[in-house]
Length: 131
Image (cartoon, rainbow, N blue to C red):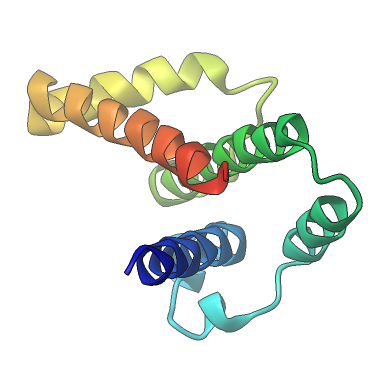
């Protein structure tokens, strides 16, 4: 049974990675068909994993993937709220404003929970990717 459990975790990790990489940048583009496209970053990740198979490289790729997921979620939020994409250099201050808006809208506990869920989700993605 351990082999089946490991296979199930690997399949779940693959599905999560695929969805994270295929996630579109705006809510209007979000559909089941959008998740079926082939993300170029997935091909790059597979190529790098085939060439470099050390644990450090896998951890680095997991951290990079977690950052990509967080930035995509922030980009979707900016697209929905401000009708423009997130710019990492100019919009970092707006993240605090977004947290304040979320706290005013749903309450501080909900906003902290949302941020915690993002961080835990990113950490779980890294943990699942590290063999």
